Length: 319
Ligand code: TXD
Image 1 (cartoon, rainbow, N blue to C red):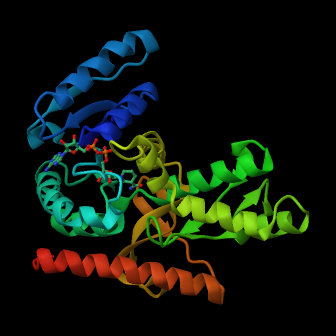
Image 2 (cartoon, rainbow, N blue to C red; image 1 turned 45 degrees about the vertical axis):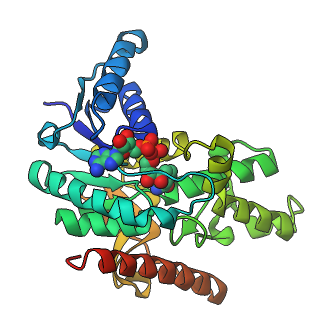
Image 3 (cartoon, protein in one colour; image 1 turned 90 degrees about the vertical axis):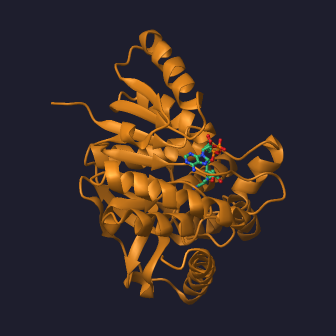
């Protein structure tokens, strides 16, 4: 049986990290693609030279032509520009929308059967545009944001409670970033919901609110520390988790920017919701009952994503 083929479209900070993680986990053969000449080829060769040291078998290659992604099983898209200090995710829309049009055409032509994981920001609008530009089935195009946002939330909670990250579960909904909706009542330590932990004196409501806000600001905090770009280790790890669930048909239940056709009262948009990822791609969208406060926050998040999609249509009316 042939190995899986993973195409990384964008070989920058996240793309290179994706390639390294996919190699270490022996997920299949890896093609790094970029418009920058040399970057994909250099990173592919460098990681290939680490393979004997680590003990993994993977054919790694770098390319500047989309034909190299022919027949990929998974495409992970980071092509575009990243934030610099002082920039919002939304500031990237104009440039990155044009990139999504090129990427969509490349995937449509060479990897129409792939499971496509979009990372490029502003995520919720870029994944929506990428699905339309590529014409791939809506259940085969998904955005990575919620796994990262919940990873940040879990990290801060584990620190607060001094427990293993393995026993913290976090539940986030909505758009990626400022309008993200972390659900405290569905986030737990070993199944104990956060509101119960407040009652048990493990933390306070105020501290919890602080942690939620720090999660929302997670990307900006890293951008301000790094100064030259945005986060890449945790985003890459998050996309790899989603790719693995598809390739191994694990049916993980993960927060993803998925296409909604009426779920949560949302139509023809991508928003962060809990999904089941298996060999069919996004196999199920899980609809939970939201209370008034949560619904209001979710609707606010949907409204901000809708605004970004309208901005996209203003630039590319064919969307
Ligand atoms: O949770 C999330 N979804 C976010 C997403 C988490 C972190 C970063 N987020 C976004 O991912 C970030 O705002 C960017 O839009 C992407 C990629 O971030 P990265 O840090 O990897 O950016 P780099 O290092 O600048 O890499 C981008 C690469 C770079 O090598 C460019 O040459 C290439 O994209 N690029 C292109 N490749 C193909 N085609 C085109 N047109 C193109 N333009 C640039």
